[in-house]
Image 1: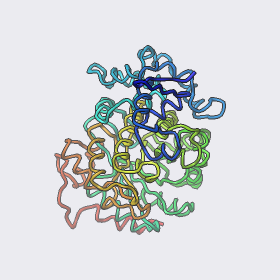
Image 2 (image 1 turned 180 degrees about the vertical axis):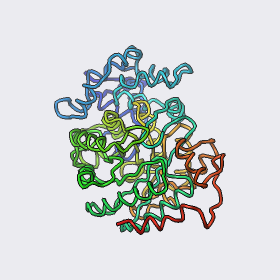
Image 3 (image 1 turned 90 degrees about the vertical axis):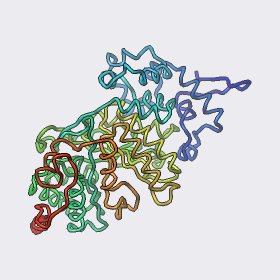
Image 4 (image 1 turned 45 degrees about the vertical axis):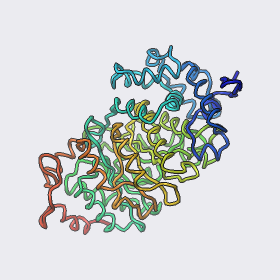
Length: 464
């Protein structure tokens, strides 16, 4: 069938939905590398006009990755909620954009349609939106999750405390945890990327973080961001596992390159749920994603990277995660070339994830060979806070010395809190005041030599 649109005397044709979505995408280096991007701004505009006129219902009839070949496609189609879709089923993609931005479309209405949306619908409408549209529409939607505290409430911003160490040295990790906690960070999760995949080191880190958490009665969750099969082995070994982490992508082949499928994720979720470690809820899956992962795995099926990213969110929502994090600039300039492309991608990812009902966070980051700097990250960080992002990263000095990339710091969270008047997770806020890190207004207090957290060295004596 295909699609077409005339610009002046020139007619543009787009062979299928996959091609139309790719040509309508804002420019980015990954789509150019894949050979799917529009060849000119005129072609991009023609694709957007054709996309705007396309009925949303068409997305239920044409898959960009064949149903028979891909379990992510099957999950998306088989779990589509026709009743939730009914309110917007008559709209075109362009009309859906207007519906999203209308004054009477609030968070409740967005929540009501979430299960009726496919990821491709979310990706499509995002391609018609300016950055300000992505911010405004996403700001209407709150997605609340719970494990040991409550994340995603309006007026609150959480921080993942990321205490990575190049050799997994427990004292180095503990020093970074202490640093972050004294800045009031860590309510999203205390999450460590291990330098190695050895089970013994992973279990040691799990015991270390759990010892610190229990010794000081911190209402948060801990996680070692290792492969899901390692987490299953750690559970079998009796390690204190709170969250199950895994990187995921938008196609079955991408996930296969990560060594996972839907079945292994469901097995790990069930194993962690059986531990019963949550105190206020049982959302315990933690997913990370990034535009370009499918292309880097040669598993993109000729689709654009942003649409495939949205499909990863369609997969993630079936596991009721506590946290979903787009690590937006981490894969490198081959996929997002500069600060402009990273900023656009971060806003798209956050918008699409929230629209699909996910608790979206963002690692506002870049690699050192990208055409970006910390000022670009300041801009994206501020826009995401305005859009209501659930959480961001807290890395000592914004420089991850193990993963060798640039992210956001504990200080950056203080900037956002002051600028937007944002609090932390309520249970964590109460703990910070109780232990003497903040005052009743949430402002940091000067540390004293007798502060109880400075006794963290005692906890290390019992660490493996």
